[in-house]
Figure 1: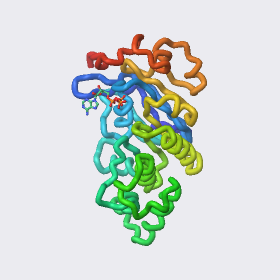
Figure 2: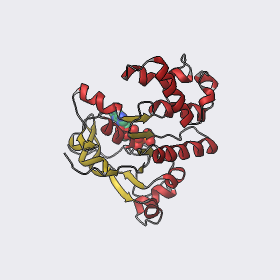
Figure 3: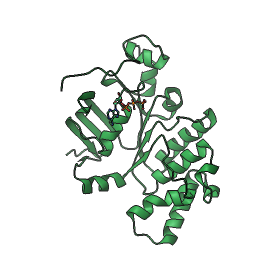
Length: 262
Ligand SMILES: Nc1ncnc2c1ncn2[C@@H]1O[C@H](COP(=O)(O)OP(=O)(O)OP(=O)(O)O)[C@@H](O)[C@H]1O
C-alpha cells in the first residue's frame, strides 16, 4: 500500500513475461495523478504489455503494480471493480457494427449500472457531446470516418467516468487532421475531467506536445523517463535512435526482444 495520493499508477520492480519470454524487466514507473504520460518505444518493445499489467490482464512475474494506491487484484470480482475505474481505448475501436453510436456508448452503462433508460440516454448524450459527436448518435459505425469512430470509442471508454484512461496507439490509421483532433481531445478531457492518462504510442511527434511526462521503453527496460523537453534534448544513443528513426543502433528493431532467464 502507498499513502501517496499524488500517484495514480505505480510499478515497482515489475517483470512481465509472455509465456517463457521476459518482455519487460525491473520496471519502476510512477504516473502522477492528473498527468498525461506518453509511453513510447519501437514496435514490439512491450508497450501494450505494460498496459496489460495496469488493467490486471497480465499478472506480473515479479514486482508490484498499484492503481490509485491499491495493488492490482488477481481475483476476478475485485478486478472487475478496478476495471470500472479504468477507461481503455484500443486500437481497433471495438465498436459493435449492428448497434448505433448511442447504443455503443451505452453498453458499459447497461453492463455495469442499473440506471433507468432515460438517465442512460442523457449520459450517452453528454459523452457524445464531450467528443463533439452529439449529432452522430443515430449513425451506425459503418457510416463514420476513422476519426469519428475513434471518438465514439473514446466516448464509450469514458462512459463510466473512469479516473484513469489508457490509450493504446490512439492515432493508428488516422490522417494528420484526425490525429490532431484526437490528441487535443485526449488533452482537453484529461484536464477538464481531472483524469490521469497513459498513452502508449510510437507517434512521438504528435503525442509529445500534449504529454507532461514521457517514458521510452526498449530492450526490455525503461531507457528514458522525464519531461518531453528532456526527451527531445537527450543525447542517449538509444533515445536518439528511437526519436530519429534510425534503423541501426543499440535498439534491435527487427530482432525479437532478447530472452532473459527468469
Ligand atoms: N498474448 C501474447 N502472447 C505471447 N506473446 C505476446 C502476447 N502479446 C504480446 N506478445 C509479445 O510480446 C512482445 C511485446 O508486445 P507488445 O504488443 O507489448 O509490444 P508493443 O510495444 O505494444 O508493440 P506494437 O507497437 O507493435 O503494438 C512482442 O514480441 C509480442 O510478440
